[in-house]
Image (cartoon, rainbow, N blue to C red; front, top):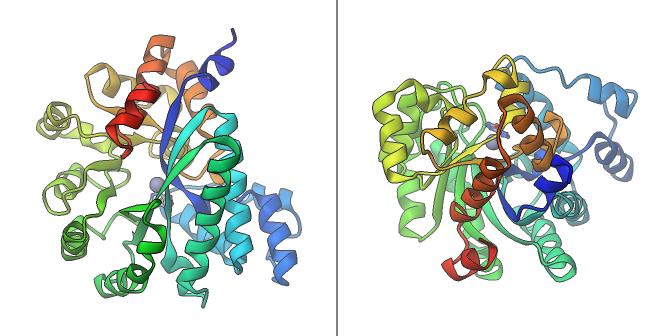
Length: 330
Ligand code: HPA
Ligand code: ZN
């Protein structure tokens, strides 16, 4: 069996995925047309060619611009349905999906519209293919603490309606200069409300941000976390506590966190006993969905089939699924 077939056959969960990062240029153009929005690119090809990033911020600028074509509930539905179909084809049986309501409410899109479209696609996909999903509402860390509190306040009345889906909170966007401590009180409130907690840390930010995400935010999972390796004491803690790291190899390559995939620390982290998973982050922008991330990592880092299976197993373990569901998938 070829390696991509082997990878597709591994039952896996995708734990680090921004739904706005799954908007392919084709869908951006289709939605722009449907909504009468003019794009500053003459073609899908020209847009794709603009995806030459130098760092996280250079990506975020295009990513927020791309999300500007999302207006109606159907737009959010179509985007999410397209992702779930691709994920299912890659052997993903469960996806924990981040979404950024502030990107949309700032443009006048109601938070109800965002939730409704994404949730309807998740429920339809579950019925059609069996793929399950949870939602992690993510706060934009370049915005203020007050803006995050306002977003939480606006979303809470929807909680009962999406109880089966919305179970957690995340933190994303520009990491440097926006440390975890900025959101300590927001996370404290979310914790009291019973949400599961994840946070981006240690992508571009220093290992101290990973430590603070654990100690100040009480994050249960660290998104990226690859720079934790620079602090051996922190690394030993992550291993001892089996804190999951949702690593995104192609993202790290495209955003120049690493110069080439052969330099990525994924294999070293895995072999040192860390609870690492492999995920796609923003697959429409970074050149591949989760299967491609497994495949390119395997080729660049000489991951064995047993190691690939271990990473897929970790993704089930590190998910927020109930234990009985995890047992079925292991
Ligand atoms: N890092 C921070 N914010 C993000 C990312 C990321 O990789 N993707 C989408 N928003
Ligand atoms: Zn991310």
